[in-house]
Image (cartoon, rainbow over the protein chains, first blue to last red):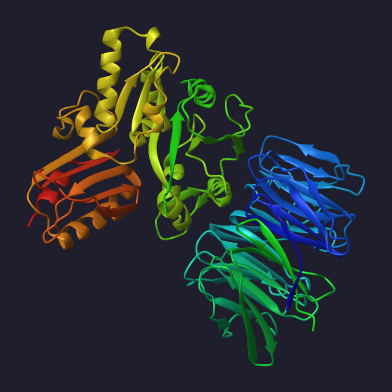
Length: 321
Length: 317
């Protein structure tokens, strides 16, 4: 393993996003940086005042958002409102860009024009996830609603008495997972229209990610990483998850490699685990960096891991032999 | 780890919150303050340190029937706490019609918020000219007063001195603990509301040495304060059982609870505070030369003074 690139942002790294060999690093405040791993160039994009949201690649260019209520893309402001915007995400086919603001999901096409979004939702959007090009799940107070854009009613939903903060939709389309305000997750199986509520975590789940094939879901919050099997008729229901120790602090980030299936997890003490699944065995490689780990992202085609840290440093590690 | 203080600003529509916010943002007080205001507030404030939030209520689903928190605050504050450059203080404005409960409970119920932040004060602005109408008509107005640590009785220039005395007396009957300042145009030395220093029952005693005696019954408000004061040590288990029973059975009606206890076998003071069904206790340090005197205040709806007093006294060893 070797470090093949690095850049320093002004603040704690909230989010990393790859586009080919370009890595976008969004810090809590200040410029959003794009590191070109080929040329070593670093390009800055304006920040969003008191707080940045996350960033997403859309039609080859970076879209950003933040507490200033703005979505910027391709040198343009697609939207400027008063309410904060924490999430911006491109659809699976890259044709649409969405941003959650209050009870509205703003959607834009590749020309930057508003497209059919969602408005007047019953609760503010805490997070959302795309499935393909036209389906979106939004979560917040009361559970999750899954929409086909353009329809008047959600095509699926689950309700519960609490609130969900984060959502991930597996790439196979079968599973939707939410991390909740209480120390729990919901895993919704579209094939059965069934939400499984898993409680008993030691803390709020801060890191959650599906493997690229949708067959594993990793969750972390406390120092233990839990990997749930999402296969078979019932998925995680009744199954024994793999619980992995080795972290020194609460797990803050997790990402599966789409190339190798390895799981990288990071904690607030600067410890990273690289977990390789080999049948029933899990091989563990451990490394330690100088600052708490705040974000992790794998390159889509190479065995490169982007590591964002609390001190603003972004390191790119190559695990290629 | 040092926790960042949070001031919560409440007040009915037109009470002067925006005037006060503008003063806080423009006056030189040497503090770096982040303001979280409502996107749909009365008047938008454009300022580089202002974040617009959506009032997003999360039910906690944790077995506590009245426990709600503000989801937007949890996410905004979580983001602010990650910054390298920290704020000296965070100020949260609620809308005029909002119940302050979810905002206050956010800092008691969410582990991450508890770890990094503490409530410095709930500051409630009161429109002296119209407050009596609001108190009669609006449960929100009564609750905003009930939750307050500091009350600015504003627009005093529009009301006679005798009327102000009557208003103050009625407010005091509802919330015996709050420090009351009379103001015009929300004119007050800013540090008096930004540097309250969190929970301080001794400070409340300075406000009105007899506030615990329950003499302030001049109106039939459903919201009132019940103060209990008793010398001697409490039996820790009995006290815990009783408080648990109180919050279980009456928590939905109790807006705030604050107390200082002398517990048998414990040299230091135990301070506790609660919001609805959530309570939090901590070591309050040595008694010093002061007598080991228990002091406890409930602010809530339909409180039974005699019952609470009698039940507490049965907890004494």
